[in-house]
Structures are given as C-alpha cells and as structure tokens.
Image (cartoon, rainbow, N blue to C red; front, side, top):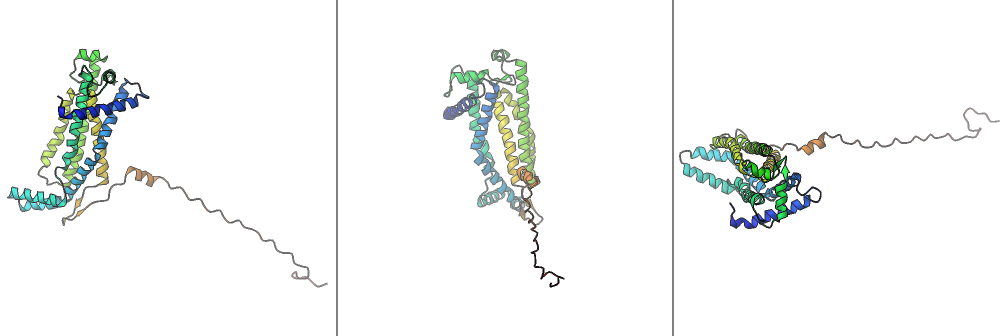
Length: 316
C-alpha cells in the first residue's frame, strides 16, 4: 500500500538506490546478486548514519533517566497510594533534569518511513509492470534478474513457484534461503532487544515494567515471522539494520557504563571499559629507544721528555 504523501521519499530512496547500484556496476556485473546485496547494505548504512544523531540523543536521555532512578524510586515510595501525584512528580523531575522518557522512540519513528519506502520501492521493482518513482526499466529488470544465494531479490516466501521459475530460480532453494534470512532476522531482533532490556533491568531492578520488558524480549522475534511475506531485499535490509543496532548499542554501552547507586543513594559512573584499539596499543611492545653510542676512548700518548728530565736519569 502506497502512501501518496510519501511519494517524495519513495523517489528519493529509488534515486539513492540508482546511484549506489551504478557505482558498484563500475566493477561488479550489473545483474549480479553481490551488486544488489551491496547496494541494499550500503543504503541501509547510509540511512543509519543519517539518524545516528537521534540515536545519541536517545541514549543520552536514557542515561539521564538512569541517573535519576534513585530519586524516581523515592517518589514512588512516597506517593505509592496516589498514582496521579506520583506520575506528576516523576514527570516534573524528568522535565527539570532535561530527561525525555519518549526519547527511545525517536530512532524507531525515524526508521518507519524509511522502512515503508524500502518496502514500497522493492515491491515496485518486483511487481510493477511500468517503472515508478523515477526508476528506469533497465534498473528494474536488473533487480529482478539478481539472485542472492540462488534466491531472487524480489521473491517472498509465499511467491508462487511458477513466478519464481519465471525469475530463473529454483522454488525450493528460494524458500530455504528466505527461511534462513528470516531466522537470522528473528535472532538479531531478539539479541537487539535483549541487549537493551538486560541493561535496563540491571540499572532498575525494581522497575514495575520489568515483567513487560521480559515479555517484549521474547515476543519481539515472533514479529520477524511476518517478514516471510517481504521481498528478500527488504529482509536483507532488516538484518543489516539489526546488526548495525547491535554494534552501535555495544559501542555506546561500553563507552558509557551503567551508573552505580551505593547504599547511601549516591550515583557514581564507573570508568568505561578500554576499547579494543586501546588494548592493542597497550599490549603492543613499545619500541626501545636507541641507546646512545658509548663515548670513544681516546688514548693519550705520553709526551716524550728529554733525557735530562726522565726519572732516574743521570746528568752526563
């Protein structure tokens, strides 16, 4: 289903795909699966770099909320019998300290139009009888001819076997490849949510939403099953963005350890773990400074004395 108000974004995504594909076509065959896989992965990385500032804003807001966790717990205990007052006090605390509880939604909201655009453009490549969104017929034919591990990029798990054969692919191989990609998508979705939920629960063990977060952690991979109806190219986009999120969160969490609350309620932040690069620099042997050359010993030859001044000599 196309959203007319997003036509400008569909056209922009299609144009970026065209540029990236043309760039790779300079040294990779135009219709190869490798070319199109790299095109989709590159597009995904560019999109994630575009919303990287939102990710940083989300994480900084989350860190701020973690630092305020002890005060939030005090408010909850103080107003445990007055839910409305408790919520008002918690929101006032967040606003006063510049923390945004909805900051975690920003990257998701930013990704949603991009995901819809990728879905719409790839669906047009697979099914549209005429070029759309500024794409050429040559580009669309190239996408339909490309295969990743023997599976056509525009194929879905439920694509009719005759249609897959028409794309010069084996229906069984195509379904196996799509099932493997969906399984990877489900696993990376689980690991992404688990990474975030585990950190959140470690920071706020008394969080009343802990049980809901656990349920979300185990339910979220099931949503990947719906991607069985997505084109292979779109599933590749989703796997790539999940792997990017995993690496991005690991980098941020390692550089920004969870705040620690002592028995008195004081919040301290541990030192970040050393990065891999710093470990390599530390373990690498430092080059020894060149030793200064030893001074050359110059032997002084004794001066020849006259016979009259030599020790023990007699005057003739």
